[in-house]
Each structure stands twice: as C-alpha cells, then as structure tokens.
Image (cartoon, rainbow, N blue to C red; front, side, top):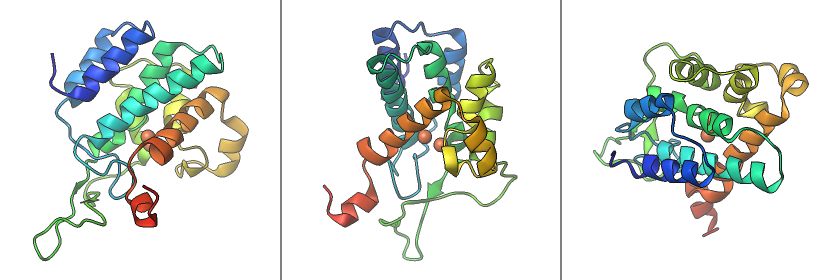
Length: 193
Ligand SMILES: [Fe+2]
Ligand SMILES: [Fe+2]
C-alpha cells in the first residue's frame, strides 16, 4: 500500500466505477508514486504532488461526464488516458523557483528545467505512457491532443479536422479540473476566493 493519497483516491474511484486495477496501472503507480511534481509552475496546483492531485481530478471529471451524459466510453480507457495525459510533468519535473533572496517565489513557486531535450507536452506524455499501457488510436490521440487548440506540437487544422469526441471528453475534463476545481494563484489575485 502506497502512502500517496492520490493513488489511494484513484484506486477508490476505480472501485466506484468498477474499473479493475490492472498490472499496467500498478506499474504506473509504482513508477511515479514518489514523484511530487506540481501541476503547474504558477497556476493550478503549483504545489508538491499537485500533478497527482490534478490527475485524480481529471479521472473523476472524465468518468463523471461519461456517466452523466451517457457517452458510453470504456471506463478503463478513460482512466488509462487520464493517468497518462500529464506524464510529461513527472518527467520534466518543475523545480522550486528560488529567488536571489533565498526564498521561494510566492507568485511563481516553480520553474521548468531548461536543460535536456524537450519533445513537447503531449508527445512526451504519449511516449512515456506507451511504456506502461498499450493504447489504440483513439487513446493515443486523446493523450497527444488533450490540450485541444493548445496542443502546440500540432497545427490547428489537423486538430480541428481530427479531434475525436473521446479527445474532447478528456480535454473538457482537464479544463474543468485546471480552471474550475483546482486552486489558482491567478484567481486568488483576482479576489475570486
Ligand atoms: Fe496537459
Ligand atoms: Fe492536465
């Protein structure tokens, strides 16, 4: 049993939706359980284990939308894609943004590393995700294009022409999580909370 509460919550969510925890999922959990990457450098969940919390929120939102709107997608497929969609943030983990004063910046607590080869957010998440899970075309596209029009590795015409409803489901779940559910430093600044 891991002490990563987000893995525990994802496992509980899977039980709620009758998704069996596969050996591939267990390998994924094991690989990243101790990875405390934030979900962003200054926006949603810019804190330790923020990426895990975000992944849980995206799983929950996508499963809920699929159920409420009777979309009919496989729950296992949804969980698989949601687990993989932001692996890039585990791999290119942001580091604390330490100011000259020695304190960590409150406005922007993290920065992304500049060294190494960066292949892009969606591409990296897909490459790394395929190390754990086999995926069909729909699942691969959903990981790759989950940022929809912000999938900067791809041209906008390709996204417009090819984006499937399944990818839209993952994209909306991602957006609902990042923009609505998760604490935002920008919202705080606007006095929204
Ligand atoms: Fe993402
Ligand atoms: Fe995300």
